[in-house]
Picture 1 (spheres, rainbow, N blue to C red):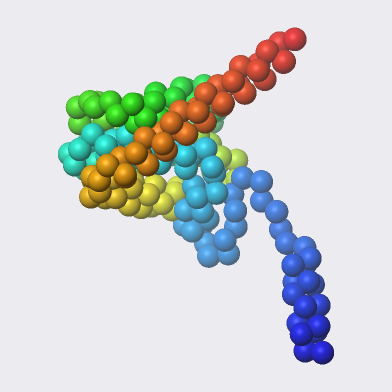
Picture 2 (spheres, rainbow, N blue to C red):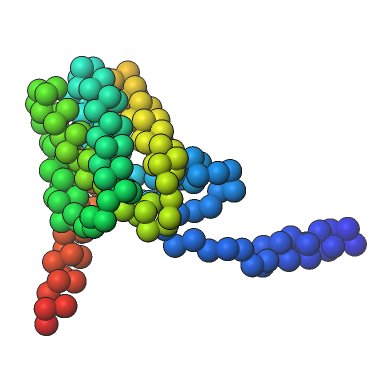
Length: 203
């Protein structure tokens, strides 16, 4: 009897109506955590950030340190422009192209200087940050949510760069390259989707 009653209560709880948020998930913990969750629940932003972190960290410890510094700063500055200005734009093609380039570089094991890695982190981090800021503005979020997002960005870059720099075993390098190939494939798929959608609209 107790089990059946518990099952009924669970079913009622699961079916209970809850608010739905199109752009910014309401965690109930305040705007800072809402902003942090925004990154974690935005797949393409997260894939882009992880790919960027893998690329920069695979270039060496110096590039990994620059990644941790440059990416959150670029994300915050570009995100602030997105939140507080009336500028719009998705840069979808640029983001997809960056995924192809960065993911392909990881898959092929290409090496570059730490300066080039830092520039890539600034440019791609800025693109992602601006789009994130525009989405936060659409959800009527403020700078506290932006700081929450940047805190999540900093956490992800630190964790991935520390992992990549610490593990140099051949097996881990293979995993890196596989992840890079998946990122490049995701970018190609996104480019195909964008071009196909544009062709359909034009037709």
